[in-house]
Length: 492
Image 1 (cartoon, one colour):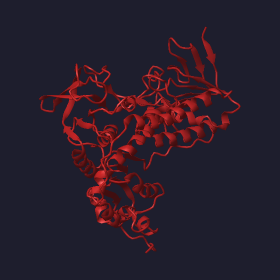
Image 2 (image 1 turned 120 degrees about the vertical axis):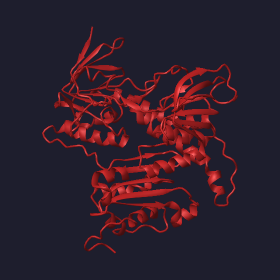
Image 3 (image 1 turned 90 degrees about the horizontal axis):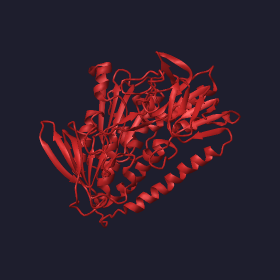
Image 4 (image 1 turned 45 degrees about the vertical axis):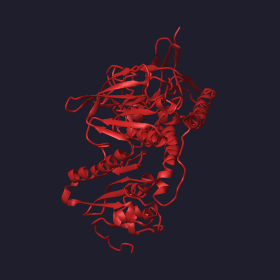
């Protein structure tokens, strides 16, 4: 017999949605539904289990593996690095899995929270039920938040069911470091894993259907990054994966077991190529899980890419109108698909759930992102092309500062790091910044601060001390190089 629950609040998704259960709900009933991630049904969402956190925990040892090469540039000889993949993996997931399981146990032990570790399907705007074969539970909530995230996209080609095919959700738990890796894709996930595996010692081939990598970034950064990537692993452009077939025996004799695969590639002009590798990572994008929860069937509005449509308060739209008490947050509705954006949206939704008569809007301005590849990349705001289109090229000023033209850049013997700032030359308003190189995700933070609080480029550059000769002078010098007006009574 079906069980019916009527909570004050229901949440689908245990990532950023999990943070909505604040002390406000201690004397109210909450249902949290999440099938979990992977074969173990890990609790806590993508970022914790298969995304931001474990990947960056791989980035660190990969970066350390490159130290001998970097040390040689400044006259220091260090022995060759040897990566112990099982030790790296076990260190990472001993921590990750404990946090995930601890989060699950904490929610299960709360008297006011019912945890449904199952797939659920919407039956209406604020109702859902567990899928067949489960607990046969129906939930009718006063308020509902859909925070069910996203998942990797796999192409519809032969061989995608082979065990050597991986996505970002499976590749980090390999038994051994693969000898030969094919990475399909040219976006941030593909580029991060290319940096990780090449640093740890794998022979990496990365293919992309377009010319260049990270092509959605500012053109100067995309071009510079592509050039550096080509120096560190094999990159083949204008190629797509057409099919994969198993090999009886891997010729490398190393990596993930003895068996490998043959990848069939097709170039943009129709030529066929073959490549034998141990594993393939498919990283061609992610899609929102709106279809898995039945959002369209429940009458919710969707964007063309499958994202649930929301208003400025994160209320879900149906027929173009917001549904009272129904919210969405994170990858299932956010174009950015970034954890820090999901966390901000969760704070807004938490406030609006608790204060329905005093709704607060979400702030989607100056959203930064970073790609922790080799080299590291960071960006915020408009690209130069976007700025030209928005305000006219004649009103745009830019400055690209080389790391190597600063004192700390000399110390590093840096030959590729760049930092580019874009501003409105009429007002000094900062429109965007784009960086590639060591610690670029930290160097860009003053620009994010300035854009968020409306500070003009000249005031940011001259209104504070910059530690000399810290690497942050790269940011300072980029700002100083802009052709912007000097405000009245500006700091010296």
